[in-house]
Length: 240
Length: 330
Image 1 (tube, helix red, strand yellow):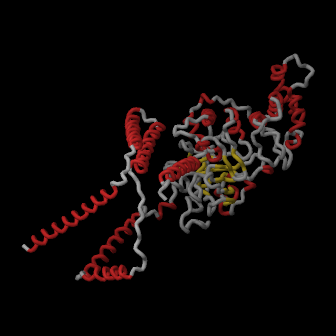
Image 2 (cartoon, helix red, strand yellow):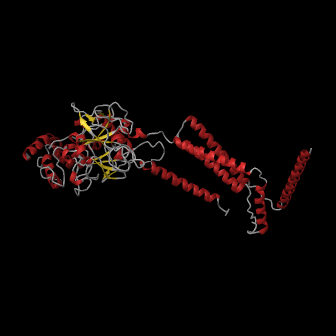
Image 3 (cartoon, chains in turn orange, green):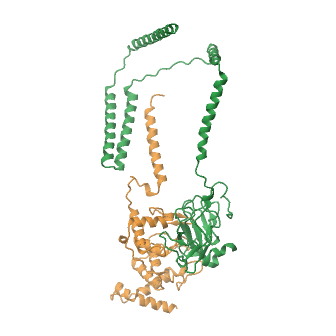
């Protein structure tokens, strides 16, 4: 099985290897080889030497595909210091080339490819509707992030359209997968809406962090209260 | 004749009082003329300027409202007009109208003569009433009628809802459709996702309509034996309306890897009531007073989802005492 997988990896990545490294680097290990090497160094302690996972530490990576590997590695969610932690967005310790090699290695075990997301194919209004139906409960209506019980729904302001597409396809950590219910156009619309929420047009004036009506009301009250107290102080001067 | 004389006397008397008051006023003016107050021209000008500016801002609001209703500018002009008006009033009060503080002496407490006067006045006040009982009766009637008028509108507090609250559109054999009226097939409900369903051919707006449907691997189901048949192939449906405050339960915590993440749960985004789908919507955490109501499902020969009956428990937000405790609907 291991041999077959390695063979598949070599065959699948062979063409790409030629493109990425070219003939000028014959001495360096090929990407499949370097991917395997990086995997053994950085991932195998939890996901197992044969990527079948290890009990209580990490899930199998067979069948998760390039979508999951690219999402977790490129957003710095993996590697994880402690397998019990929630994976969170951070700066990846890997270089772009290393990530590509690792993604190719994991993709060689089968699974969905990195989805192609073109936000221009969707609309902001449809994205808003789909986002309100499926995503808002955890990620907040303008993607500021929030909490679910025993988990944190991340802020989406750093998410690129491809990150959104991958998360919808993969269902990372405790998030459900939504590919069964959403069409490609709807996913593109969600990505476009998430892009829009990074710079929403604040028609009412100040956005105040876009975290909702409660802080807006509080700011108004504090300002108005301050102004009122000041006015009363000025008017009442000298009459006591 | 007598009446005319009386009127005449009254007019003369009133005139005399007014004459006396005017004379006092003139005396006071003469007395105070010794220390005249200079009119503050600058303050007057300032007040006039503030008033004119307020008028200009208010007019600008009118023009803007008609021409280009820009929210920020409208707020600025209207708020500015109010603020300037306030400024004018404050300036006028403080600087234009001359101010002087004068202390008036209070009569001493416990002045016996004054007390006697008050007592006499109180005693006299009721002495001229001849039809006391009639007056009291009328007052009582008016008070009672007013009280009734104030209380009666309570009868209009909402329509009588008794049966309609518990009623749901779900019947045995009613099929489940998606938001865009497509029939939902059993295989569309995979383990790592949730599906929102509605009753076929009924309004989607009613509280009892929306469902949240998930698939729990059969060995993990921990349902009471009489509910097992309602979750064919581990597909289990719940009312999407949280029994706490009626929000839509739209969060499905579904871990990719069980040992390192919290276990699966349906979570309401409003107050984080958390329900365990594998145990029939049992409340795990949060302010909801009871479990998420489960709807029995069955799969048709064509593989579509349909209801196996109405919900096991009454749906919708809890109110009063009737829904605080979990219990089967009769």
